[in-house]
Structures are given as C-alpha cells and as structure tokens.
Length: 480
Image 1 (cartoon, rainbow, N blue to C red):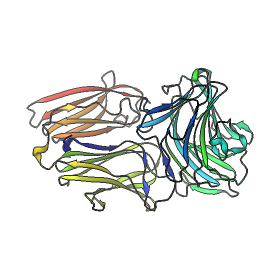
Image 2 (image 1 turned 90 degrees about the vertical axis):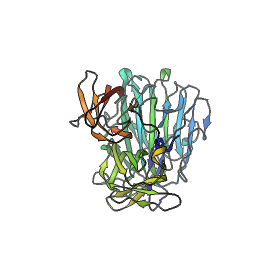
Image 3 (image 1 turned 180 degrees about the vertical axis):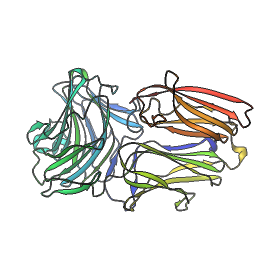
C-alpha cells in the first residue's frame, strides 16, 4: 500500500496507561478476534487473557445449548469485538468469569452491557442472567451459584412482552429495596459501574463530587446516575476478600436471553481517583506529504483536563507537539470525538500517542500508532473525487466519513434524513487535495440527538472559481 494512503488505527478499546504504572485498574476487552464457544465444557483459552495479576478468563457452557460468541460489530456495540452471551434452557447454566485476580476487601468494576435477543433487540421473553462479585470455587467451576460466595448479585429476569425485571442480592434474598429497578430495558446500551466495600469502615471516592460507600455494601451507577446507594451485600462473610466476578445465565426457553458485553475496567480497591479515560478509537492519517490528521474518540472521561499529542521517529523519545493541547470534557459518560492536525511533518515513519492530563495534574499515556509519509510529492497516487462508505455502518453513536479530492476545492458535506430534510452540515469550506476524515456524532445542527433511521450524506465539491461542480451521495444507518 502506498504510504500516502496508509491509515493506522487502533479500534479496540484501550485504557490510558498511568504515568506511575499501577498494577490496576485492569482493562479488559475482547480484542479483534471472532469465534464461538458452544461445547458443553469449560475453557480458559477461548477468551483473551487479562493483564498481569488481573485473574483468568473462563467460559462454561452447560447442556442447555446457548454459549458465547465474540462478534465484530454484527450489531453496533462497544469496541470492535464484543462478547455475546446466550443463556441455556432450564436445567443448565452458562458462565463467563474473571476469577482469582489480586484480592482485596474492596473493588471497583465497570462495563458496557446490552440485554435482549440475539440481534440486541427487545425481543427476549424468557431467561435469567446474573452478575456476581465475590470469592470462592463457584467462579471457576460448573456448579450453580452459592449465596455464601456472593458479595454483589444483580439479577435480570426476561419476561413476557420483553419486560425486564432487575433485583439485587440482599443477604439470602432477591430485593429491589433502594434500587431504581426500572433503569434497565431490553435493546438499550448501558454503562454499569459498581463500588463495593466489604471492609468495616465507610470509604470515600469521587464521582460527580465527593461520595462514600458504607461498610458491607455497594453503590451502583448506571449511565452516570446513582441507581443504588449503599445497597446491602449478599452472604459473603464480612471482611472476606473479593477476587472474582461472573456473568451467569439460565432458564431461557429457546435460548432467547442474550447479553452483549465489552469495555471492562476493574480494580481491587475503591478507586482513589475515578477510573481513567477510555479510548474507543485512535487514528493517524497522512493527509499530504507534510501533514498528519490525529483523531480519537473517548467512551467516557473522569476528571479529564485535556490531551496533548506527542510524536516520535526512530528510537527518539516522544515529545509533545507545541500547540497540540485539546481541552477535555471533565467527567462524562458520553462519547466525544477529538481531532488535531500536525502540519509540520517530515517524510518518514512517525509514531503518535496521547498524553492525557487529569484535573489533579496526573498524566496517562495512550499506546502509540504509526503513520508513514511519502518521501516526495511524486509518491502520492493520483487523487480522484470520491466519497467512501461511512465506518462503522450501522453505527451508534459515531461514525467516520472519508472523502478524497483531486485538487483543492470548496467542499460541502451534509447529512439528510430519509425525507430529504437537511439535519447537519459537517463541512462547508475549502479543502486541500487528498484524503479527509470527518466524524459525525448522530446529532443535528441544533445539538439534538437524532433517532434511529436511514440517513443520506452528500458530498459536493466546486473548483475554485466555480468552473466545475461534482456531487455524490451515500446512505448510512443509525441504530440507537
């Protein structure tokens, strides 16, 4: 591939690496591979391995079918590859667990989840899924759950009319006392965060201000809102360590009940500072022989002051690019897109990374992405006017639209609804020859979150002086 056209991207979710390199929080996702595990046995090698001291990943499929599938954006969810978990029929259990990470009396866990039918829709009417934290053999065996090993238990029961009932494990019983039990519905994506404390003293943490979690209790956050405050724990002994978590499915007629999971972070402490910024995408694109476009998307941000872009070539250390600071969004569970263009790049191979700056001055670094610039203008392939298919498609909440120009032209890139009404202008300015990338966040020009549906995007390019006009249109599908 010609170096001018080369695009380097990281599309798996990654955690920014702390400058002081703690052993945890651990980040866990399903990488870029695909495959299914439906055999009636267990496996500790089917899923990617967690980071050092982050435990062991295990799946177990019982005799009631169902199973686990790593899928790459069959539906728009999470990062590039997510895990779809299908519950078995009655008389059997399926399990996905991370067990035996470094233990402690406290923990913080976050993950993305969607509940529903096999296509993520609100169509499942039978089955039960659970999420457990705790300690004991149950997290790595084939037996039904033991209440004495459970610190946190959350239960989702799929019922008639796609009704979803949510309860938590309070001692030896299931309860909804103190829980916003209507927060979950089928067919929707959620960011779930739990702060658990099995120690004898209340412990502080920061989440939209100062918080604390009581002894022998946990706090449950859904999409950045507190859904359960100081919820009682299960039957795990007071003061016992916690070193495992698990998803556990059962009793689904026709294997109807599915979970979609991705973007895990977990720690063996109440996060002293909240869990760090998560990146969903990080791209470096050569625009012309002297410029590189850097773009990235965050899944969520906590106390994020902003980013600086650093670059390196060969064995040279990374150095910040002067004037590259991009302000962050503080604390948010909404995804955001960022861009920066490096207009002073010599030919050769370069590596770029992000330095994320916390409000407290702490520093974290992303992994690096390489990009290669052509050695001369003659290396650049003949450019042509073109509009590429957006990626991903279908999408939620953002998508990347790219176009190519044969020369410098005045460009208009607009989004229309299915009736032809204009909803957003993405570009309206002169653009140089070459490849350009634009991120659309599914919002209208007025900042309104647009509904699911089919949308058109139209590229119009007019040569300077108005000597010729070219136009082309493509379709894209937004699925909320």
